[in-house]
Image 1 (spheres, rainbow, N blue to C red):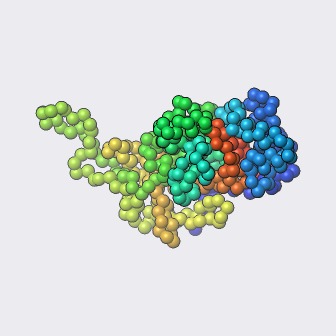
Image 2 (image 1 turned 60 degrees about the horizontal axis):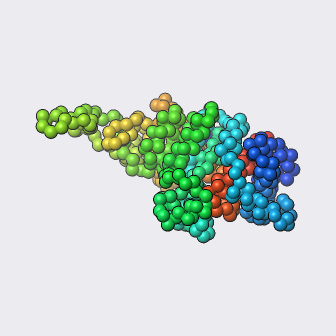
Image 3 (image 1 turned 90 degrees about the vertical axis):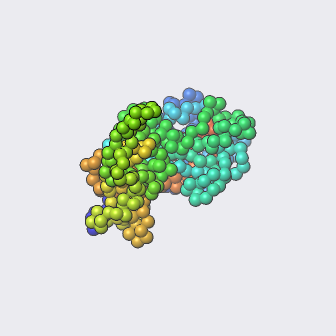
Length: 412
């Protein structure tokens, strides 16, 4: 069997390993300290980062502050204000963060990973909370839904950006007006679907400055949106997007033409696929028709587990756009040799790309799932107990910075 295809390094450092790294944390905070306008903000940011990295059973604000400051009566409220209401600029911190990630982890063929992460939430006052499909929760639940952008290379992986998803009624219905006001939702906020939130983050990372990345990968919640895929192509990035089994494709580009005008009525203006051309079919149907020799079995290392083995096939196909032939893309199929389960992908990578590269990219989703797991189990990502729009974004920004500190220490 061929050599195992490696994806990215595994994080093997936890907050419990950091007891002797206080000076390193102080130096790390100094990178971001000038971006806070006030001395008090700089001090609370340092304390919060330290608290997120402590080995505590729970990392909501009160136990975190008590562990750092003791029973000081005003400290808990001051920290709550810093997170929930503080006027410090997340954007400036994240832009600097992207520079640090590029320096520590950046590779020319690095991968941007888009995924959602949800946090179960009690009550109805937290911004964006709703009974909705909980993604990783595996069921409908009362939760806040976030969309996150990660980065992975052979050096490691971390999170880059985050956006809180607001369900349509939170933005459009008058019944939610008071909740929006109390939660500090910007007045001009419009409903933004999750794929568009993801696009905004990718565009921001791409436009702020040169970032070493080549690929974008995502699950089918994003991959089924053909407009989204075409936007990624326009940025000059390559995607390998998981898609449902039913997107229609042509194995070869069908002939098209403008229908002949019959001389009556308005002349036709829309090109159509010619009669007699084969109909588009699905990537799963195309895969089922492949001969046995088209499949290759490859071992692939995903996460901390040993290498898994899967069967892969890749074929050049023509994507459908508005019922007409669109771009030529790769249709990639990954099959579990034991269960026969299929995962299907589309990719705009060049025709000359190797199967090994496509196989590796099919395994580049797990790093962001690991980032979520580490964030929730070790860094208080789901224990924030803040309700406001600003508070959610502040909390996630500092969790992201804490995670990168762990990544940096592992690299060293």
